[in-house]
Structure formats: structure tokens, C-alpha cells
Length: 246
Ligand code: CA
Image 1 (tube, rainbow, N blue to C red):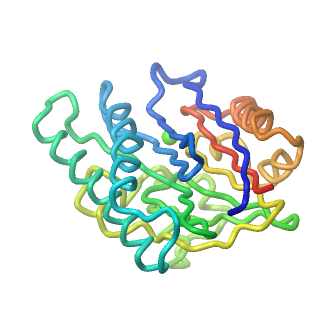
Image 2: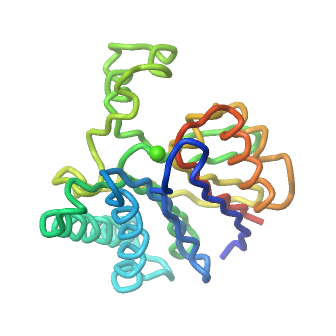
């Protein structure tokens, strides 16, 4: 198994009253999750906190972290996310203060020699390998759907008024239709970055790439990325987890 080092930072930012992002970095380095909650009052915070609490609990029960076939691992992940989705939906029905709460989720899960990366919503996972930055997750946003359909172009997508509108997230029926998890064989030198859209509201891919190689300390990089997003004008909560493969 490859050895890894991590860094992580989450801030409320300058424009929000509370931090609706949540994340988890497993002490045994088996999974890393970022969730970006939404909903009135404290509902968003609740939803993202539930996601990072319930998904690991389910993974511990359902997933063989020593490995398995891709479909076994992905099924266990999808079921874990599905469970969190159902719980969030049920709670939002019984608790008036949690009405219509929802959350995105992205994850990096290690099983055997492989990484499994995916999510629901518009939080992202990037991989920097051999000098190329690649987004490994799909945004489940209306803007991304319009982009894929060819209705709008990349430039229009950046400022499109539906760019924060999601068609899939946890807390809705559509939240449970899989996580599009992909299997990746990690390589020494890989640098992964899981982040909420507060990061990408402030900085672009070029800057993410530049900052991911700006230090040998993943915690320093996690802090630099969040600082840069804040300085870049992000008006959101800002959260990122950096994972180095040694
Ligand atoms: Ca956000």
C-alpha cells in the first residue's frame, strides 16, 4: 500500500455567518470526504455533518478496505452514500429546522492498492500527476449539463446564473443514484485535492495546479489554497483536503 500525507483546512470565509462545509480525514487514512451543505438556518451544517458522520460508519461496515473487485468496492461506497442520503431525507421530513436540507459529497476511498474517487453534487476532486491537473469528478450542476449539451461554452459557464444550481445532491431522491466512482491506481508523486466550490469560486485550475506544487508540506498547501480562494474573492465557505502520495 502506498503511503500518504494529508493537509486540510475549512473556513467560514468573509461573507457567511456559519460554515456549512464539513470534512473528514480518517485517522487510518482509509477515506477522505468533503461535504458542502445547503438549506436555511443551520440545516446545511446539519446535512453536511451527517454525510461525513454516516458515510464512514457505513463504509466501516460494508467495505473491505483490504480490497476487492471494482464493483464490490463501488457498490459498498454507493450503498454507504445512499444510506446517508436516506437519513438526511428522513430527518429533513421530521425536523422543521432541517427542512429541505441537502449536501454535496466528494470522497477519496482507499481499498487494497486502489483509490476510489467520486461524489454527488458540485464539490470536486482534482489530481495533479506529471504536471497535469485533471478534475476527476463530474459536477452535477445545471451549468455543467448545459455545457455538455453544447448549449453554452466554457467561458459562458464560468459566470452562468445556474452554475450553483444542482440537479443531484444528498437529501433528495436523485441523491441516491450512484456516485460515479472511478478507480485509480495511485502513483508516487500524485497530489489529490478534494474541495468545496468555495475554492473554485475564488481561484481557477491554473492557480490550483500552481499551489499544489508550491510546498512539500500538504498542510501548508491546504492553507495556501484556502487563502488564495479568499483573496480571489470567494464569497462562500472554503474547504479543501490535500492528499500526497509518497
Ligand atoms: Ca459552497
